[in-house]
Amino acid sequence: MKTEAAVQNGILYVRLAGDLIGSPDSQQLLHTVNEQLGEDVTLCAIDLSHVRFINSTGIGVLVSVLTKFRNQGGELVLINPSDHIRKLLVITKLNAIFTVAATDTEAAEHLKAIR
Image (cartoon, rainbow, N blue to C red; front, side, top):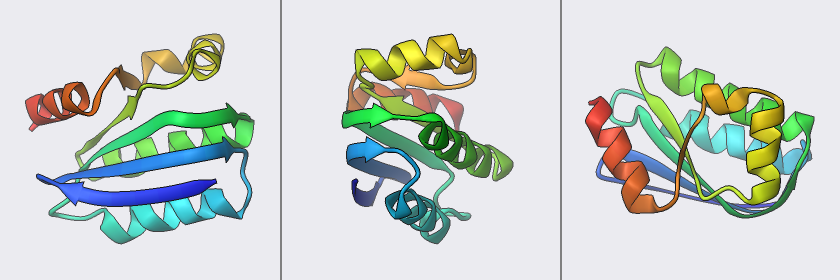
């Protein structure tokens, strides 16, 4: 899995590509979040548009990232998950706790409304 991260306007944008299946790459995602999370960054948008497959470990990583941001008074939005990932969120009932946005702009608007 490939992970890219950048902070723009106080929002941490993380772009993932490949499979989110709990390999050492998942640890890279957690490390990236831990480095950026703090007083200046409490909002996060994770772009899943290029994630091909996700398993239970990958879902656990996303829940962990969501928890980290919420514990800091922030929020997380998932951007453009595939149909497979959307179905998985519904089956696991995690669609009730994750906010899903179609685009970066929609995610930013949602996150800014929280501030």
